[in-house]
Image (cartoon, rainbow, N blue to C red; front, side, top):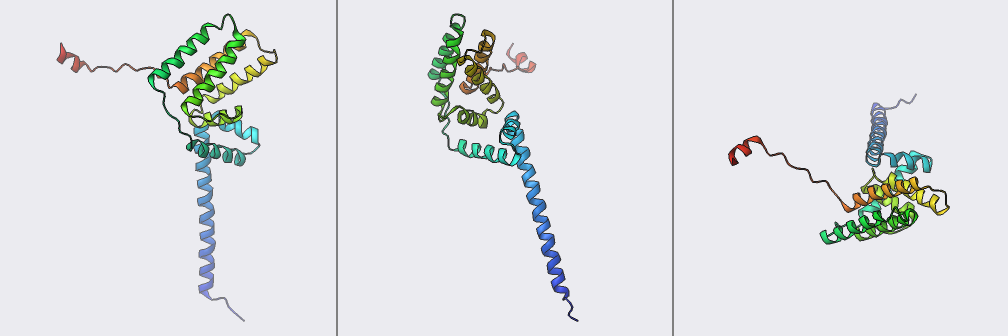
Length: 197
């Protein structure tokens, strides 16, 4: 009767353990990646899973967005350009009372112009929203909401309150893209005040 040498049994056991360890490592890496994408994209992660029907497809799409966004040359605006965009927004907002429908269209156009100026490519809406979601995942949902109101308005189905809400949504994205930051006033330590008085 042939017996299997002990050496083959050990090698087979080591190979099985190595395959098991590799499978565990792969599973852990996949979970880490899923967690990272879910944390980074927030609600956009769940929206993408629902739209594509599976986590695997959604994660593949989100990773593709990140790779695509790495090739963008996103640049900050010069102060004069930022001022021009801010003035354009203020003028647009002032026209809302007289022409709410027109202002929603103009808000969309101004946001697109700002995106283009910053270096975002201009594709269809879904591509633009996907591109925005990489750097601004918290705000892309409002962009989608503004766009949906604009579509309803084009059909004549949006009321003035919805149009106002669309402008508010566009403004949130506009501020994010403009990189408007509220200056935080630094607290001066009491010891520093005492030295200067």
